[in-house]
Image (cartoon, one colour):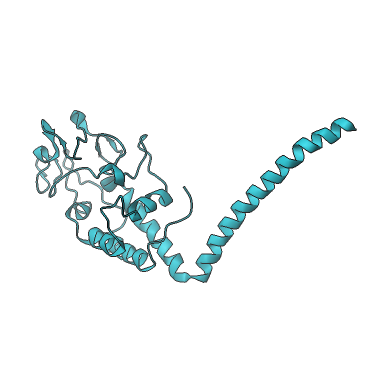
Length: 211
């Protein structure tokens, strides 16, 4: 009987902790659902963000938003050939800098893509981890909206960037692969991407909960 009492005294606190943890998680999720239900604009903004996220983590974008010292290539996001590296200014190294091969426009005769001032995104704007796995929607959203990391852009500036920046627009005109086939484009049209960004910005650039 005494042994059972001691066992219960050890197990009961653990049961309480587990119950409180589950209750907290459930309450947090319920709070988010309640907030969405109470504010349709918030719900639409979060849904719009998920559309934006689907583009940002597509190969045409995330291949240059790496967490490593090299860019990636292709829909399978393999490491850039010839051991190309990021370099101190995200533009390669003097012996092999980005614009040495990537010109102002696509070179369909060779399959080398191109656009103005071709370069990697800074590490502050990485959208994947060092194992090449895309970061979560919540993590990318926090990165994109953090003015200390995004070149001090507010929502309006982010919208203009998505709408007008040449290297953003290149994703919908990525040219041909060396074998002559067309590179894939993001999962949304550019117009739909801009529209989703606008809805997200209009809602106050909300980010989903989570890590």
